[in-house]
Amino acid sequence: MNQREKIEIFKTILKRLHQGESIETLKKEFGEIIASLPPFEIPAIEQELLKEGEITVRDIIKMCDLHVELFRGTVSGAGREIEKLPLGHPLRNLYEENKQILKDSEVLSLLASSVFSSESNEGKGEFLKELKELLKQMRNIGFTHYTREEMLIFPYLERRGITAVPTVLWSKHDEIRLKVKMVLDLLESQETNRNLKGELFELARMVADMVFRENNILYPTLKVLLSEGEWAAIKIFEKEIGYYKIDPKDEWKTSEKPLLPFEIDPRVSGETFEKMPEEVKRVVGQLKPETYQIRKEEDYDLQTGFLSKEELMALFKTLPLDVTFIDRNDRVKFFSHGLRIFHRAPTVIGRPVQFCHPPRSVHIVNKILQSFKEGRKDVAEFWINLAGRLIHIRYFPVRNEKGEYLGTIEVVQDVTEIKKLEGEKRLLDWKD
Image 1 (cartoon, one colour):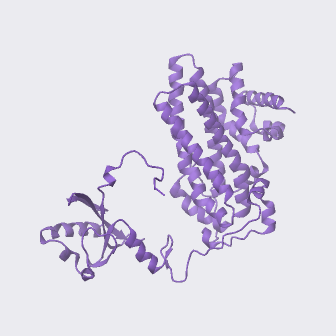
Image 2 (cartoon, helix red, strand yellow; image 1 turned 180 degrees about the vertical axis):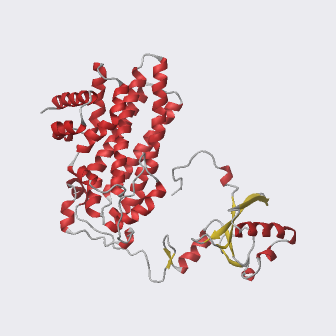
């Protein structure tokens, strides 16, 4: 069957769907053909439907939820396997998000076509408004869906020696992020020209192609490689990043201990390797898992990482900040020994903080400390001019996981040069 015949069948399916036929009936009749059709070709086919005049843009947009379920759910057997995972499983969450993302890429293509084909200014303005709103929503794909993959998923692949796949996908993520920003900027500047139309269609294609890569390459790989303990750790942190247009139901539970990348055995068995998608096996070749042990015997466990005493001291010495810690009894317990804006000497260790300030300002110190201890305030800040420099001084209460007051930290920073910053600097300008 050639591409033209596939397109005609696709059009038939859409028309029957429009007429109210059930998804399950159409899946049984056309499932294999649908699976052979690349998702990024769908918008082009829909454009032909629009040209024929039998179905309007509004009709297709209304049907997009059904399209996604019908066409994308049958892309591969791997997708069907992932759909068997309980709701709330991190991999299932990614897959469900991709349904929304694919729907949005389809609507994007349709709205882009409508903006440039509408004959009335009123109609064009309405489509343009919807287009801008959709693009603003799609920026969140990069902040949620892609970021969860980059920060939570990729480290597990890299630990096992699979570095090429995350690198390529992250590059594609950034291309999409930049493209969304670019077309939004063009729209805000009223540059609704033919070049913009092409950019919008290209963005829709890029987003659909990424869904195809993830559903058919990345996710099947993750399903084979990652253990319950690894998914348990990912589940803990994914809510902090957020989701794209889904509200996961927490039906997935596991009793497995959460495992971070540095805690796993990175070796991949031959049996597991053979279950990975061919595209991944071709890229990774001979796996060389990372064996580096990040935690050393003398390290302190700081909950979000490990540092030795030497590293901890050097870190505070290197920070471009002047840091002092006062314990719950108002005694100076620590100060950083690198960059100092206000002079400190070890003679202040153990000294009541009130004696470290001029008598005229002690009442202010006490007021700050009392409000922190009572939980009424979370920051006190001041800025002063000192020898021609702008100095920013901030105080923060330090509390444990129970919310109990442990002390106060003073952070002092010279923000003179920071205050002069404008625009952006994204490139390194070092002279070799």
